[in-house]
Image (cartoon, rainbow, N blue to C red; front, top):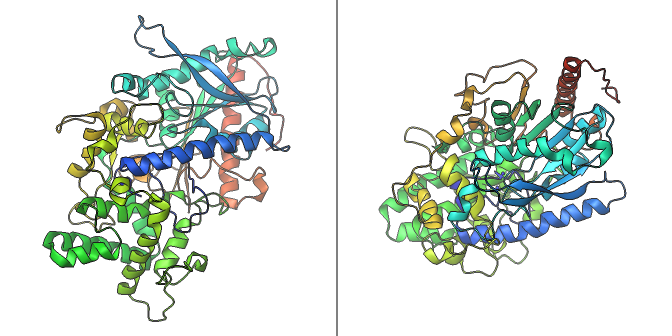
Length: 547
């Protein structure tokens, strides 16, 4: 994975960039936000992703992928628990040639249906087409339709963790042959190289597989892999602060500064400022958090401007700075959102930002009451433990293992999020969602034990982007000893965002040169792994398509 709790974490981080419908004022929907916003987005997301899967399968030019179910263990580490659940996966043998790899794309913290496009026109297609591979999408336990339990009580969420999910992948690879037709029953990790690919959280999982289960997965491509985990991830906004349009960033920084200043003073100056942004009824920190939810759309940047959400940041900044993206003016709005003044100044930019925020309320909350939609203080909003309350899934994972709360920057650093949005405020969503005590601990050691910034393996390739807001949690972080690696297993794509190598155009030659280079390098690396695998077995193998 991923309005609202951009100040905590964006999963999708989501790994799925999605603008639902034709919203004039899109606000990225993060995976950890006020329950009202999260619930609205999750319901729409489910419908949209399943629809995409169906639309793709009906396309006459699409590569055929079959949706199937794998009998997966509920608990891999308790021998007394023999319960199983049906884990969804998609598989295609369209390009398969004997000896080719099994390319398993990690579903991550969302419905696996959202990954099908990457197998049709992106990295999944390229690896399977050039190397004669079998393509698979493996949906993550609990997400999409891979239901583990009948409901989402705290007791039933105990099997939603990184260790269980990693073992899912290994068990799947080791036992898939039992589900395949007779002519493919030889497909096992000891006879066929299984290759894992993941982006973001799924990318971290791909990397971790090389530590935990290298006998099941011969190699891994880990894109935007967040191998570091920690409670305080204020640096999420550092990439956009450093490379975003300077005028746009100045407007955001000044707005954040005024929110901190005015909220400390209180009175009419603060009340009027909240009213300007249309959030007067929200509690102070909820108001600040909602206003700066817009920062999450930076994550949706992409070299392919036809990707959903790829143009949103430019449209937003254009609207609050120089009047770019004029299709975002609102005919029925009494005030014009765009600034077309030649003597544009910071004050006008803040005013434009406020008008944008007011105009975005409808697309964020619809007809729902603002406090109910974007507030975090009503405990009733956190109720619900049915399978329809899937907004709690990634929240559970970050509250128990991953962290990634995103508050304002520490004193002494420029900040794009008001500092009143602090860790104490952000931790409340964990407390309220799962009835955790105030002193609860996010045990990131369960993630860091796999290596964090130091994680390397002989057949592990890292791919990151210079503009990715998650960069500081990856091996290319400025804090990482691997940040200056220049070997073929470490790529930092210039002017690229969150796992931007995952999508493609279906024809590498039509892509920008920097993306072509990455895709060809990934194919070459996996080709060499497959060659090595077969040489070690005394087998001969050649890729069916020349690179």
